Structure formats: C-alpha cells, structure tokens
Image 1 (cartoon, rainbow, N blue to C red):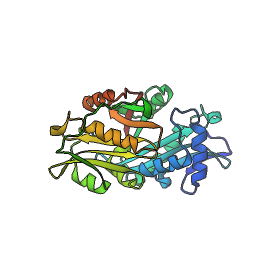
Image 2 (cartoon, one colour; image 1 turned 60 degrees about the horizontal axis):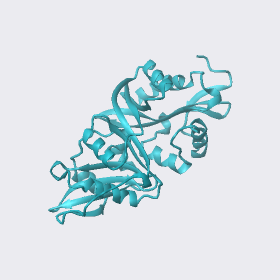
Image 3 (cartoon, rainbow, N blue to C red; image 1 turned 120 degrees about the vertical axis):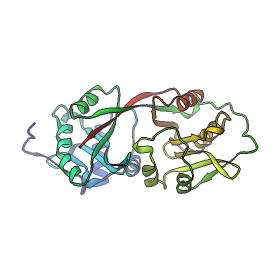
Image 4 (cartoon, helix red, strand yellow; image 1 turned 90 degrees about the vertical axis):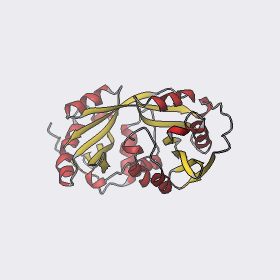
Length: 289
C-alpha cells in the first residue's frame, strides 16, 4: 500500500503521553474495557513499553494508527510484545497496521529482537486474520474474566490455625516462590511484575515459616495478576481467602483476571467456584523475526 503524500510512519520516542493517550482513546472508544490516561500509562510501564521501538502512522501531525511495543525476554528469547495496536475509525481499511508492522521489523531485528508476541481477542476476526496473514502462529488460548465485585461469592470457613496471611514485599515473594502451574503470559510474568511494583500489592499465606500461597494484584484496577497455592495446601480454601482479601483491598468496582490458559483446569474450576465464569477468550500468537 502506498501512503498518501501527507502521511508517514515514524517512531514514537518524541510523542508526549497525552498525544499517545488521545490516539489510544479514539482508536479504542468502542472497546469493552476502557482506560483513562493514568491506566494507559500504568499498562505501558508494566508491559515494558519501548518508545524507541514503537511506531505510528501520522496524517500531517496527527497520530492516526499505532503499535506500542514492549521489549524484554519471553521464554528466554529476546521478544517484542504488542502492548496495543489501534487505528482510529476513519483511517481503518487502509492497511496501516500492516504497514506499521513491516516498518518496525528492521528496527526490531537491529535491536536483537528474535520473536514478536501478541494477544488478540478471539471474536475479533479481522484482527486474527490480519495477524495470520502477517505470519503469526497461535501458541496458546486464554480465558479472561471481568466481573462486578458484588456478583462474587466466597463461602469460606476461617483459615486453619496453622496458616497466617500478611502483606509481603513483591521482590521477596518472587524470590521465595515457584509453585504456580501456569507459565504466565507477558503481562503477568516476573519481569512485568517487577516493572510495576509501585502499583501492585501482594499477600501471602504462611505455614511453618514458609510461603504456601500468594496473590499479586493491582488495587487501582482490580486486576488479579497472579494467584497460586502450593500443591500440598490446596483444597483448604486458602485461595478464596487470598482472592477475597485482594478484592476487599481494591478500589475498582470490577475484578479482572486476564490470560488464564484454557487447559489450566484447576484455576478455571477455582474461579468458577467464586462466581467467575469466563467472559471471553484470547489467542496468544508469536512470529519469529
């Protein structure tokens, strides 16, 4: 596709947060989950947004389409992550997302990036088909969950006396635990958590001097980032106590659990027992560069 004479693709390094948000809000105004500017900035920080390796299409000086790329390591491979791709309505159908993607590849390769990773809503058929045409392969399917806090229920008995729950520092928690059954998605892995420790909180359950369960969450948004209980301490309602405590501590009206693999039967059954059936599904997709 040839861009019109007054349109160009260029990097986003010098674009202010306000202009990025203006384009993002316009492109996603009909999206089912909305963000204010503070929420977008928190999301970009957590997901490793790299403005030097992010690009947009500009009509004169107006940002009309964009891809916000995060960079880091995923499964021990230098990876770029599509934190957000959007086009404002009147510029759709011109192939701008594809043009931005192909424009970015030489820059990503020069930076040592070997894989490109993204997630896409399964019901967004046009986006799924676009990414397949660009060479992306589906690697996993995810459930996502969004529920009003008041619709959840926790019929729990008190924790057994051998357990105690307390707030813990996230770096301490990451270093001390490794018993989740799930290989986390980009936004929920340890690197993303470490980038956002100021916005996240963590609670842990202890027994005999060791952490046996934990929950990491974002109080401002209601996002439950990680929740895990060690195998020998499951089915004792520890997970429900942690989730209920995190929800009480949240200022948001909704609870969000994003990117649970569809084959993670244990956590899916647990969320259902709390009144959280899946809201929808996403694909995780990867393309080698």
